[in-house]
Length: 277
Image (tube, rainbow, N blue to C red; front, side, top):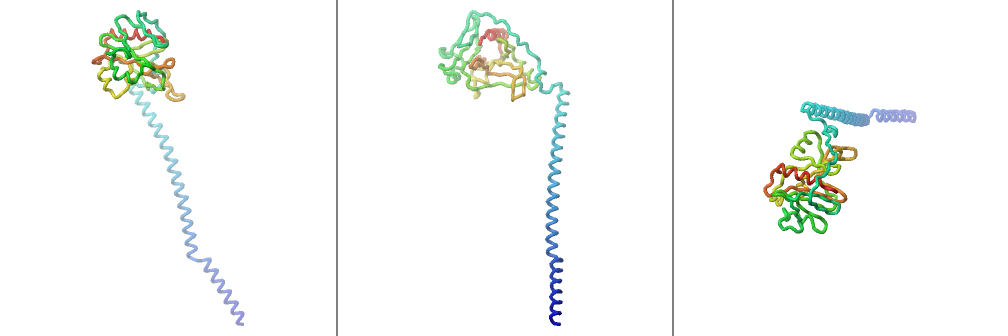
């Protein structure tokens, strides 16, 4: 009898233990916390994804809006979008060079000039303009610096071997192009088009200048299709001219600077158009 009661008691105890394990509040609480944690992670992930997607579409809408606004402003102002066909075509047909009695030749380069212009050589003429600034930059054994002089105007030419240097720019629209050519004259040399500035630098200003000769260029070569990066072209120019392995830089200098007299400017155009590379 005692054994039977003992067995019954043991079974009751086991039953209570199972009920306690199954219905344990601590276990239920842990499961509930774990479920909430997983749900929070899912909600946060969905929220982040929603924000990223919304941000992407907002950014695309913003780009489209800005592009339309820019186009509207350009249409309202009459300024076209950057387009190499928007800028007027320049006549680049070669002209017959003017025959002058005098000439200077260095390697493959030749320029002619009239009698009332005087040739100066930086390596031999003590009074060569801004020689103190140019001589250290252009050693006589590897380069050449000359000037064609009339009255107070000096058309300086520096010649050196190509060393990777360059200077120039591009035109994004008609406004930039018109501003560029407004104070320059067209010069035809061979089959290429150049622009000659009407401004003359002051000799003293150049001697004290922190810039170098490439920033003083008076003659620029025009390019109808200048590649800025692979597949992207604009109309543009180079201030330093490259021909046959040499760099050519033209600088206008006078004692006081200013603008070139129209007669002398026309003569310089003719002198430059006599150049042969």
